[in-house]
Length: 273
Image (cartoon, rainbow, N blue to C red; front, side, top):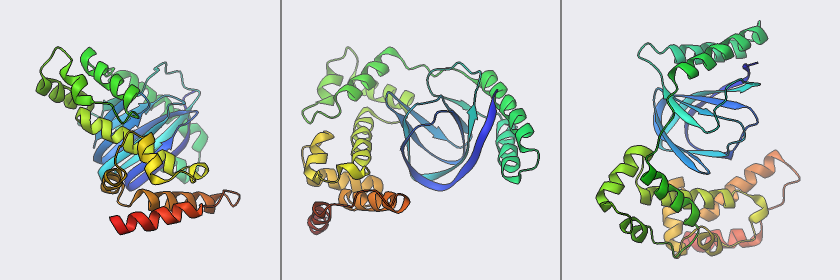
């Protein structure tokens, strides 16, 4: 019980694509700041934060300037939390020390099984001691849920919804940013762009042109979508799709090939950008 089955780390990284684990995932951020986005929750992080992810929670990770972390997976845990949450290390960095020791002994190999169980129990104990359930106010949760339900609709008017609520527009914007880490409009844009990135990275969706992907993710103007996507990910949507699909094909020789339409889209958008 509470056995650590995998330990690794990210060197400077800006994006981690959509994925999930059948085990618990514990992530200690050793530098940088950013956001982890789940289907129904966004958690901001900075150096010294630990995010705990229960099994089977699909998530992505984005940082404008990059982050580093140590992450590990725990199997057969007796933790009973149902949603991801964040805790912070103390001034003495006891939790960081436990992560670093687990990383060293996992990769060093000697007496690994015994030590991984011991470190697993230690970290679970820290989590139970330090955990404070993140609480979003009812109004912030209402806004977040409304965005999640409507982000793919290009006719969705977030401002109109915010102004329909019985609170000051500026107050709602500031409260949302305080609790979620970004403004409602940034949350909406990130949700759309990350959905687009997930769609583009799937080799089985390479027949859709960029304008179609933009519309499916709530954007009315393909060129605006392309500019925003390039600002977030550093390359155009078309080249992002080519890069991700080629990477998957290198890992799986049977992966389907990029269609000619993707290459044509890339050339067309390159001329416009």
